[in-house]
Image 1: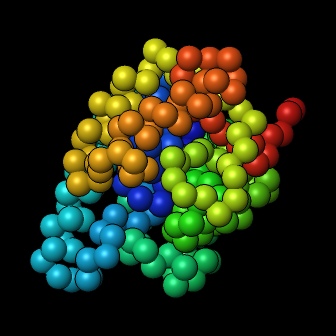
Image 2: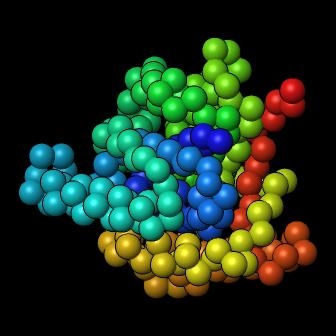
Length: 218
């Protein structure tokens, strides 16, 4: 089965569903990752710092993707933190082209619940691009981040990741520029705390939670 994962930044997929990605790759599914932005944060475009961090973030993403068994990575190259200023049609078309290229049956995307506008914009664009017309997509889901939320993320799909969770943490360690100390959301302890919480909710030791957007049963 072909699976498309859409991320706003070059670490979203690891933080949001890294253990599930490894589980899916072990099951021989073909996972394709789409990263919308260059991951440069607040660095000014065309500066030396901008070019440096962009290369670092891209390399880290490729290394972690290879480690988790992701088959392909496509970087769309939009500017980090500026997706709310980018015409939505441009992002929609870019995602639609990848859907046509890989013909996925399942698509995962960022949540709309946290305060990062890039995450919300990618969520909205993915929902549009995955409309059930002229594609083979049967299931669309949101993954989750340990972050400050404007509305609560309410998962209704849970994946047992007890055996795969160490791989998620190892994959996140490739993203050295993004690691912070607890209680910052992008800390190893925060990521584990969320997995424990979702595990408690689903009677599992460790789990990743997802919110179902659409599921078509044929």
